[in-house]
Amino acid sequence: MCWIVLTAALAVAMGGPAMATPAEDRAAAAQTNALDIPTPRCTPLAVASVIASGHDGNVPENTLDGRLDTRWSNLGKGSWIDYDIGTVAKVGGVSVAWHEGNKRRNDFVVSTSNDGIHYKVVYTGQSSGTTVDAETYRFDPRKARRVRITVNGNNLNDWASLAEARVCAAKVPPREIVWRGNFETGDIKQWSGAQMVDPDRLLVVTSPVTQGRYAMKTTVFQGDDPIDSSGNRNELVQVTNEPSGSEYFYKWSTMFDASFPSERHWQLFTQWHHSGNSGSPPVEFYVYGEEMRLNIGGSPGVQVWQAPLVRNQWRDFVFHVKWSSDPKVGFVELYLDGQLVMPKRYIATQYPGQLNYLKVGLYRDEVIEPVGILYHDKWTMSRSIDGLLPVTD
Ligand SMILES: [Ca+2]
Image (cartoon, rainbow, N blue to C red):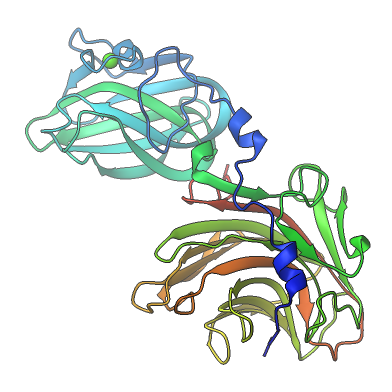
């Protein structure tokens, strides 16, 4: 299914620069403590105050002075240090530079609280024992005012001893976002190009939206064929050209209109198309009848996921891909509405010698008569899943 032939018109439409860094990323200034240390995968939040279960003269404030040669220390398993960020905010991790961190593997727990009384454990783990620099431990984003690190000893002794620590925002550190196509420019200029019979078929709208001010309404009438090919379509194109061996996370939301046709024919709403001239795309999200499906590998390929089609409701996708034509290297993994619905599955996600590009909108079997309407929002391409999943209370 879904055979198309690329034309010269597409090559022109795809001519825009790929993966430009949006101004909003460059402008996203991190709120930080006065004294900064490198905190990979962490955008530090300002801390209003810090307390601890005790100390040996090395006070808890020493973990906020930007110096690795000062520390908080307290003897005994269960010692804790507790950071108050002054207001309830979305947090997504902690970054810790451990005293003697290149020698000690610390057992620790991170918990969060809104009131300083009730705490929920959000992370349990060990430090690497290989570095004195800050290591970041991410957890599922949540709203909290206090973040507590409880140390249950290390492989050498029962001291809890941290040189520096930061509370990380839930938000993705801007450098991890490589592209946004969330329509917040009020138009489709974030995208490389479009294949549409008329601008009203890929319309940026202010309602409905699920994020920010704008979303995109896609409409396809029978006969819409902007590139003189098989099937009917109106689609945006983003020339992602993911290198072979690269790994990315894609977040977006799709809502099918209440009128969306129930047809036992293919209706693609998101696809990664190969660079070649013909053949089915290697990655296809589509509707068939009353199901959403994901097919990998073209025709016939493998249907790796399906779920009931729901109309008139935003569905949040987070799609994790390793791009490779080697089925032992490439993989796909899918979250829907914040839940892992397809665990990592190894499969070829590219065709040999070809790269892929992203197409979003609606592309469907030309036999379908009723008008098809759906909405897209939030398109984000990132190097990590940090900040892409919904924040829980
Ligand atoms: Ca310090």
